[in-house]
Image 1 (cartoon, rainbow, N blue to C red):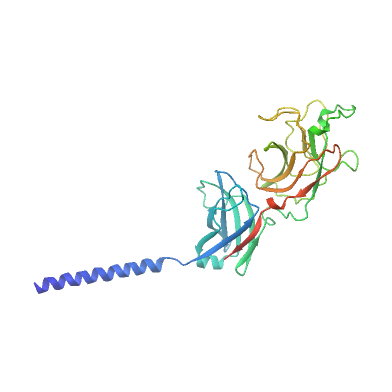
Image 2: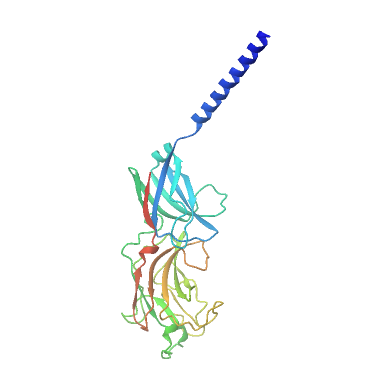
Length: 301
């Protein structure tokens, strides 16, 4: 009997020791984490199909730090993320990308909007490396309807129905007048917009400032083709819910930067220039820097 109890005691002790050892191993296997904190401005609601995702660069390889969304007020769903402490300490840079909400690809998408190099425990992030430098930008536009004018005929006196991005004050033909960074056309393009009753209407996408954009579906046919500038007249093929001809006066005008693969019927989050069109016809009107829609910020580790 004594031998039996001795065996039971020995087995119990062995199980206890093994259990403690297993718990110790599990504790030792848990990697230490550190907190990465984002303080970003200029981000907007991406809708239900896309999310923001942060990445740290470790020996040239991106490692995710987590995803988050932004509401209509520009407030992020999450600003602090637990990251492997060793990886975070050795990270050289931070990148922010836009990803599909249900993304099977573990790598970053091509839509990278912010980046910055860690200096000590922080990094200042902006669009400079991933898209372009939007400091000191400017542009002008004018209201005119050249596609409604027959060759050799006088102005039809309805210039409130068209918008073109350039300089008309220096004479005819009007010339390009954007001060904007040139984009990598394989990744990014500019797009013009007129907002009427909350609905954005595209004037077309463009990469060059002294050429027509890729769209003329609202302009008249049979008249002039319009100047060698991005822009549009609003006479035909009105989108549902909009009446043409469209009077552009007092409408919001926006220049956005769009992913080259994006066909969303609304402007992307990066909208560097905007203005409210005034009453002047066939005269320059200035676009203003839209600092609130140019993402930037800091990242701390």
